[in-house]
Amino acid sequence: MSLDAATVRRIAKLARIRVDDAEISVLQTELNAILGYVEQLSEIDVTGITPLSGGADMAMRLRADIVTDGDIAPQILANAPDRAGDFFSVPKVVE
Image (cartoon, rainbow, N blue to C red):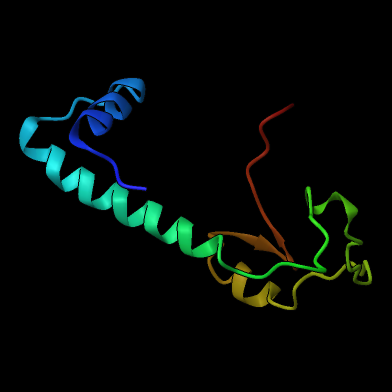
C-alpha cells in the first residue's frame, strides 16, 4: 500500500498535527516505509500458533518473598549527618 500526499495531509489533520507542505514528502516516505514493514509482517507463517489476547493468561514466575536490608546499611548511613547506631538521627519535631 502506498500513501499519496492527500492521504498524508488527511492523516495529519485527523491526528491534529500541523504539517507544512515541505514536510509532506518526508512524511509520505516515512509512512510508506512503515506500511511496507507491516506488509512484510503479514508474510510470516503463523499456522499452529494460538492468538494471545494479553498477558493475563500467562502464569507469573514467583520468587521467594524474603525481607532483607539490602546489606548496604553502612554505605547508606555514611551520608547521614547524624546517626544513632544503625539509624538516622533527626531532630525532635513534636513535643
